Image (tube, rainbow, N blue to C red; front, side, top):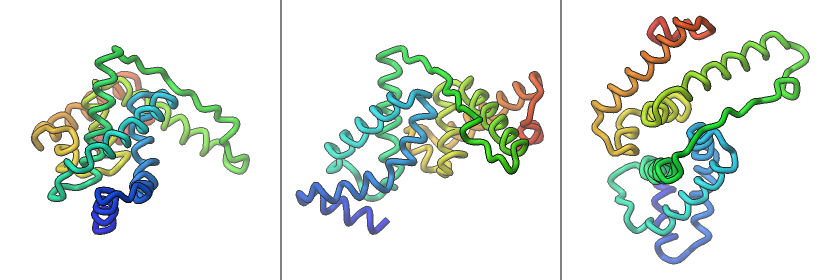
Length: 188
């Protein structure tokens, strides 16, 4: 946290190179989150780049009393939501060629892991944007409830309710369709 504050101060003092440290620290996590929202690698890359530009231009508006990562995610998420509204954005499924990533020593285990991941991604993709985002932030990026509330600009109770609702929908879909996610139907 102190490291980020130092970088922010350096950037605000005119050291543009210090911003590279911020980008390097967050680019992969932010890209992974945005990719799961857009399901399109090129759009995700563009949105993340746009988000980092917006953050750079508005760095002087960041208030150090909150988490920088939450503020950064909020800027990125808001940008994505704006783009979704502008374009009536539709998501497309990304398929992974399992033959290229299967470990020949344990093909069944690798296959099952990929199958679970694909099913989970499909389940998450069926959720409304706000619920999908909460699931991604909480379980993929391991962001706590308070930070999610801050990122999305909604009360903590709304985050908890939407998370509960999203998990319930996923459990119901899993029960209805069967599949690998028995832990969801057991409250996991």
